[in-house]
Amino acid sequence: MKLVVAMTSLMLLSALAAAEPKRDAVGGIAVRLSGFESDAGMAVCSLFKKDGWLQAGKGQPRKAAIHDHSATCEFENVPYGTYAVAAFHDEDGDGAVDKRLGIPVEDYCFSNRATPKRLRPPSFDDAKFEHGRAKTQEPCELH
Image 1 (tube, one colour):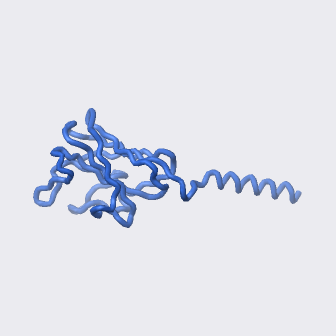
Image 2: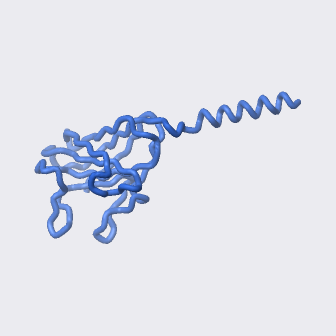
């Protein structure tokens, strides 16, 4: 009887260990951007961890061509964890979000459908998503 209990316990522990993502595992993140008004310019995305959220130089930047009013920013070999994305439509190709009176005039979006509140960008907690598979898909609708 003890042998049956021990074998059952080992099988359950093995199944749980296999289901748990490895802490040092990596995968890709594909941020699928939609809602572009035109195919002019480039899509610009940045992938952030919590401690660098929206700080210059802290995100992993990517640019992607726009086709049929959509684009995909690809991030490879990203360690599993919690991330957030900020993206915008760089229509004029200057690499920066154009603003008028401090308000963006180029379309933008954040992961997890997060939206600005009181003229401030969303918090990391509002925009975060979990990455824990070989390829994580994250949609982002520009506005």
